[in-house]
Structures are given as C-alpha cells and as structure tokens.
Image (cartoon, rainbow over all chains, first blue to last red; front, top):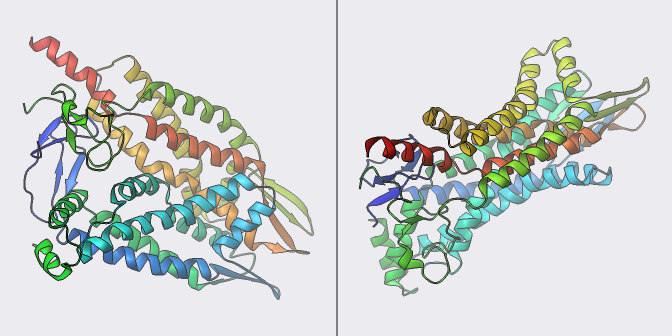
Length: 217
Length: 212
C-alpha cells in the first residue's frame, strides 16, 4: 500500500518511486507535484523554522518604519497598525491583518517546532497529528511575503510626502519571509511520517543518543 | 492498476498526509489512521459550497470597487480614494511600476480569480471533458496568486498607522477596505472548497465509455 500514492489533484494512482535528493515527482496524468525529496529535509526545516521564530519576535517588537514630516515623527509596529485600524472602527480589517501577518505565521512556526524539535531529540510528541494538520490549515493564511510587498508599496507612496526611515522590523520581515519560504520548500511530509514511524517503534524516550544516530540514516 | 484512480480502486486518500486507506482499515469512523484528519472520497458538497462563496464574493466585489478604501484628510480638505483611483493616481504621479503592481494585485487578480473559478465550477457541473490539463493548471494558478490581492489591505493598514500628523494630514481606511478584504477571503475559501479531482472524474468516465 505504501508504494502507491494518489494524486491530490486528479486522484490517479501513481507508483511511488525513489528519486534523488533535490528531485521532485509529478503526477503522470495532470502534472501536479506529488512529492519532493530534500537532503536532510527535517533538519533543514527545523533550522529555518527556529530562525524564523527568532525573527518573528524581532519583527513584531520593533517599528517597521518611521516617518518624518517637517519635524513631526510617527512610527508604527505591525501590532500598532492593527490597533489603529481596530480603534478606527475597522475591526474586521484589523482582525484580517492580525490573523494573516501575526497569528497564522506564529501558529505555523510554533506547530512546526512542536513537531520537529522533539523528533530531532528522538521522541514523538503526543499531539503531532493535530499539529501537522494545523500547519496545513495555517499555511495558506500566513501572508508575510504579501505584507512585505504591501509595506514597500506604502513606503514608495509616502516618499514624496515625508522622509521615510526603514526600521529594524522591516529588515526582519524581509528575512522572515525568506526563512519561512525556505522552511516550507524544504519540508518533506513523507520524511516526517517515516521518522515518526521509525522513532515511535523504538519508543523509549530516554535513549535519545541512540535513536538520533539511527534516525539520521 | 497503473491507470486507475484511487476512487476506482476503492481506496481513500487522506487529504492532509496523503496516506491511502482501504475502507476496511477505517471501519470505525472515517478518520486517517496516521494524522487523524477526516477522510472523504471527494471534498463534501464542493460545488454547492464554492457557489455560495463565489456568489457572496461577486456581491461584495461591487462595494469593494465603488466605495473608498482610503480617506485622506489634510489642511487643504479631504480626499477619498477607491482602488481604481489609487492606481490612476500612482500612474499619473509618475510611479508606473507601482501602479502596475497595485493594478495586477488589486484589480486584475481578484477579477480574474472570480471568472476563473466560475468557469471551473460550471465546467465541472456540466461534467465537461474539455481540456482537463489546462483547467487543472488554471486551478493551480488561482490557488497560487489569490493571496497577493491582500496587498491593498496591508497598504491601507500601514498608511493608516503612519500618516497621523494631527494638523497636517491623516489617513483612514474606508469602508471599501472591508468589502475588499471580504472578497479576498471569500475567494480564498472558494478556491479551498473546490475539489480539482472533479475536473478529472468525467474525463475518466468518458475515456472508459470509449474503450469498453
């Protein structure tokens, strides 16, 4: 049963073949991407995700941009702009911005770390299946890269109006966008389930060192 | 075996982790044995749900484009901008690359997405066997580009927060932004509710009828 995979777009059964790292397998009929293989997929994803988590904190704590118009200075953090919208009777828009730029990216990153860090240490976290589904649900709604473009467009619009000073968070958002994309691209769900199965069978939580060596294969 | 779909082989694939199930494996409630997602042969009520989201999106598409998304107040009076007038302003003020970006993300993509989903939906409803490859590709593109329409919402959010110079100028988000955000969210829900396998189901039946 494991040697077959159903295409998620046209339902055709494809034989699962071994492909070289860096390669990808597509459906024979409709050409949809079936799976990808990346060398050390889970380690890479974990590394990128941990980096993203750190940047996410920085990106949310510091101002994105500062504006200087004839001595009047204003600056805003991401959450600050959500607050302004919320206080301005734009609650639905504020909620949408909050969900897509703060909540969903945080859920996606948190769930990923919850799955991958314990696996790396040699045990299977209890709620891994729920977290796997959470990542899948959150991903389409986390729009850090769109937000980044939106920020750049607003800065370009403001340039003739006032002096624009990019803040720390702007650079952090740029890097966060790159790391989240890298994490998503290197994540191989097939590898995840293979690791879960291998780790789960050995079960004992305390034999970390031993299982680590084997799981790396 | 190699030209069969999972449905024809009587297998249930998990939409989340892609594990294939025999019906006997999941006798106790249709739940994936690996990731515990609910199993469906096809997304439930796909066509009805997509229609509901699409019709709501079409209705809101009007206020999204007619009502102002931004209200600018300054010493010299106030000015309101709809999405289109914002693009025109960018174009005439000389920043045409920005005008193109905003036009594509805020006007072209949402409009094209609504039309594309409607075409896909009608073709699926009529069990069409017309160019399934291209329709499949169209669906993939719709899924990929839809998120970029959020651009205008973020621009409004940033500008509102930054341009708060009490006496000189203030920018507020307008009611159009609410409708526009709703259109983006509704079309994303529609794309998610659509089951691309419905494009291929009639193709298979059609093919089988001819070879039998």
